[in-house]
Image (cartoon, rainbow, N blue to C red; front, side, top):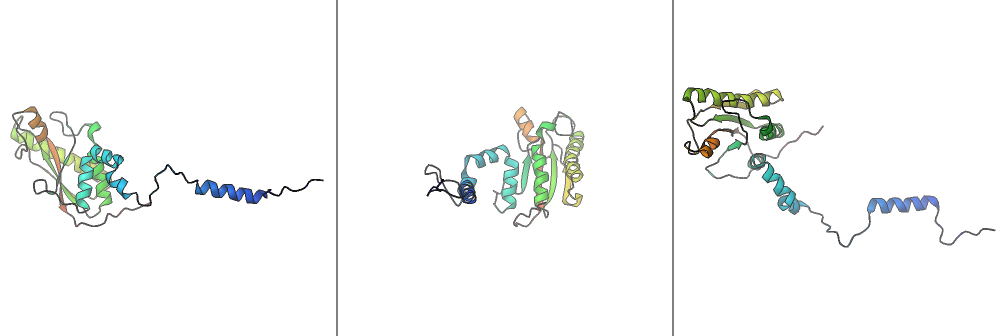
Length: 196
C-alpha cells in the first residue's frame, strides 16, 4: 500500500510555484538594482558613445528640447557630409546626418528649417554659387521624397561668400565645403512621436 509523502505537492501547485519563480526571478546580491535608470541614461558609457557617434543629431535634438547654445552657433547645425569635388550629391557613405535630419523632422512636426549650401573658393564664384545651391536642393528633395512637407524646408546656396575657415589651406577648404541646417521656426515643446 502506497502512502502519500507528507512533503508531496500537487502538480498544479508545482507548476504555479515554478511559474512564480521564473517570472519573478531570484534575488542576486551582486547585481545593482535601481528603480531610476535616468542617471545611467544621462551619463552612461552607451549614452556618451551615442552622442559621439552622432553629434549633429544629438546637438539638434537637445536644442529643440530647450538646451540653449552659445551665440556663435545659434540655430545653425553643420551636416557632416562629404562631396566629390564638383559633385552636387553627397557621398552615399556620408548620409547618416541627413537621415538623422529626416527622423528629427518627423519627430518634430512644427519644425521648419533652411538648408544652406557653402563651398570653398576653388574655381569660379558663379559656379560655386550654383554648386552650393544644387547641394542644398539635393538635401531638400531627399527630405520631400521621404514625406516631409516642402513648405517646411527652404534651400539656399551661398557659394564661397561665407567662409568659416582659411581657404588657403586644405583643412580650411574642407571646413568651408559644408551644408548648414538652420532652424527657422520652432517653439520649444515636448517631442510628439506617433507610434504605429
